[in-house]
Length: 329
Image (cartoon, rainbow, N blue to C red; front, side, top):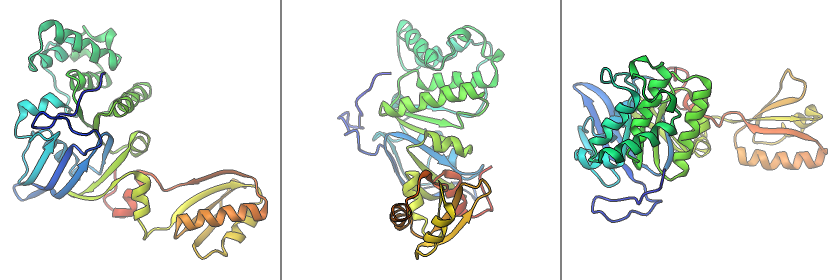
């Protein structure tokens, strides 16, 4: 998929590093029910994951981006385009919903091609783009079968092909990994990473948190309509100062290391794990811990097999921010 200039509403090019999906003080209410409240976001290129339990506001944010609903208050812009202008918006945005419905009797190829015809492409051009998208999601062999005979995972992938076929700059994907078997999931994640590497804006919602950690350049944590935190996972973790950092170490003579490190003021706990080689540290300041750890390794002449944080992931961050209640399912 080739790169395209980042067009603004005026038709001029936008610098690639400029945030292109903007929420300014956006709220959305459904009668008396809160969808999202006072959201301010600037989302740049790469893969951004929306993380939260069902009903947290993820789909509301996506529907606002896609213009399927309008804000009760505030302003949304996508590539400088208001979602209130759907004809211009859908030239730059592709949307893959989680809803599993298709026109009756259509083949996968017909489904993708028919969408392209709405973009004003000639028949030949639409067919070429449809095949390009179908090949990208690896459904060539099933392209001329009716979608009604597809498995759930195949239907998920043909929706992704439809969202990508017109080569959008922004791709909004609502729970795109649902229903995929492990091989198809790995292939789809590879597609997302490639899109992000090409400079597209890929917005993904998910409640499968180990997948979020694998694919995301940044995360937006949302609960009950409010944005809890946003940014790179490690950067968000550094802002959670009320919870000690957890660091796992595998090394020789772990008891000597634990005793040595417990003398440092930043170390809250050193727990020997049952595997006879690991110790789990909890530290109030991760940077100070790592500096003290390096000095301890040199002083004790230790051989270290592993050193890694255990709570720089979406699941830990979410639980730190909202507690055990209301967690991601």
